[in-house]
Figure 1 (cartoon, rainbow, N blue to C red):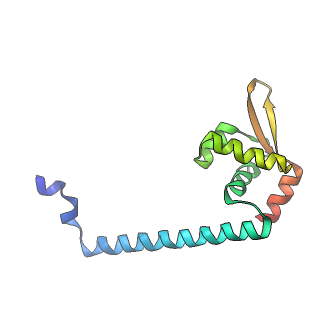
Figure 2 (figure 1 turned 90 degrees about the vertical axis):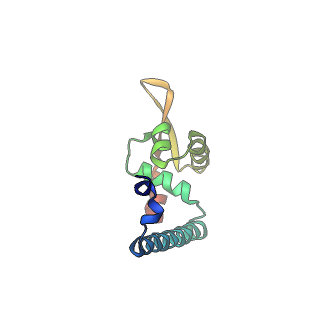
Figure 3 (figure 1 turned 30 degrees about the vertical axis):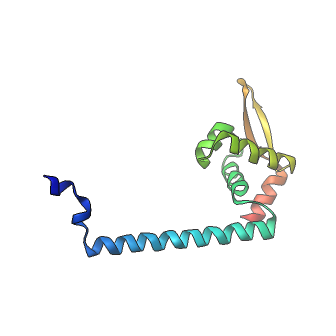
Length: 121
């Protein structure tokens, strides 16, 4: 029974190859993300998180609540607030109060934001 719980003793050469493949794929992913970040910064003077937020909003023309953006992007509400503040200053997004709950805001792309995102995408 103790041997059955010892997973490391059951590793084979095939497992080693799988791990090497996974690490190689991770390395490629990091290189691609670095290239995307560099191109967004140099060409459009925008960060990947800001682009990601705009990409989420592009899919939902009526907007998304701040909490929903936080869940979709897997970051804190504070991060979403900071990114939204920056994009709002540049007139790329707008906060719209929820008519059913004044404590809640949705974020939408502005027409300028839609044009900018289309160019970047």
